[in-house]
Image (cartoon, rainbow, N blue to C red):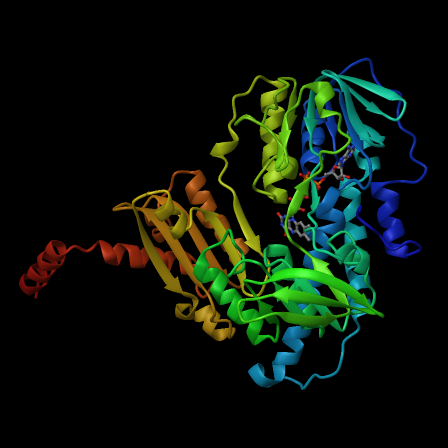
Length: 503
Ligand SMILES: Cc1cc2nc3c(=O)[nH]c(=O)nc-3n(C[C@H](O)[C@H](O)[C@H](O)COP(=O)(O)OP(=O)(O)OC[C@H]3O[C@@H](n4cnc5c(N)ncnc54)[C@H](O)[C@@H]3O)c2cc1C
């Protein structure tokens, strides 16, 4: 399956004109490129633009849509859909929470999806073929495959290289559920082509993508069941954060079924029936559509990795800490090789690879401090270790936690669900990790990431004045809580002696 667009749609035609122009003519290849990049998602685009900007001869190969998952079927459309769903939810809640006008009835789902397609097309020129050609990159539209240790073929063209970068990304993994393929299902590659709201939707997978889309479709008015084999949502995030999100989803009317295995799917007329194995007994679920969001698989097939001496496993291309593959002339970035499958992480890996591949740099991927965020309401953001990971790794640590309900801004905006939890090296203010749950958590985690990247402790955040009333104050409050906890009984005694004298 590949990313799908709506044929004949004004906005999707405008998008296609940027990211896969129908009349595109591939250039005549140069004798040899400094860099050949396979895949024009975030990882490939940033690699190509940075290298060309430094004067390198660069070829960029894309078989489908430039911009990759993020622009076409990932971050961009999902966040546009989430923002529309949040606005609908806010409008419905306005009467009860803010004395606003009473809003009822269905909204216009097709209009919300059209808005998404319009915004996506509007953002597309920055990733488009014409822009990259103007940057001096030779853009080849077609499937790239290695034909030797220093050659890549695209159609009839052979591109010779000094260095190559594999940035072919990942796609939705589809679990081997009997009947699923025959019954038909959606993934992130097809869900954004919907123009009619499914009345009943089953979402398989409680990771970030499953949770974000389950909540959005519920807020649009669908009956949503979210199914996961694990006992909890967001398996890579803090357990308390995941529990709070689960409560929120249930409070919005999502039917949450965890610890459940989908045994089979059958097509019954226009709809689908799922059979589930669940500790509470077998379940049957009738829905109109099934959305599979159960993990990602690296795009490795057809790349000719053997021809180039490049090793891979089912989880992706094998790379060292400098992102070099087993062929020293070839590097990899992004979802195809990384456990951090995020746009910003593909971006930073690409910058690192340009240094390492073209300038004998020694930059290490393990030095990157990578935050992430699930854009649910409330948002769930993480950087570094969770407290559970610190415990599992035997890292001595302290935890400082502050509830969002202590923030005046959160109280005034009636958004008091959430917390900031900072994991510190035992007895110091060195930050090992942090979890933030609440509105704009994804923005707030940037401050902790800055501190961790720059070797600043929680004390430095506490000494930094934050405007009142903002959500960012939560981190300063966490620092205050840490400082208060530092007052040992001896210091407290000294202070009380001082205040007896100082009258
Ligand atoms: C629904 C969804 C929501 C997401 N939301 C967010 C978010 O909010 N924030 C965030 O940071 N991340 C998000 N992500 C993840 C993000 O989209 C990816 O991490 C990012 O796109 C990875 O970039 P990449 O360059 O590694 O791969 P991709 O973007 O997948 O690009 C790879 C490109 O390589 C091309 N390709 C593959 N094989 C070949 C070949 N043989 N020859 C030529 N071309 C080839 C593909 O067609 C594709 O265009 C989301 C993902 C999904 C699915």
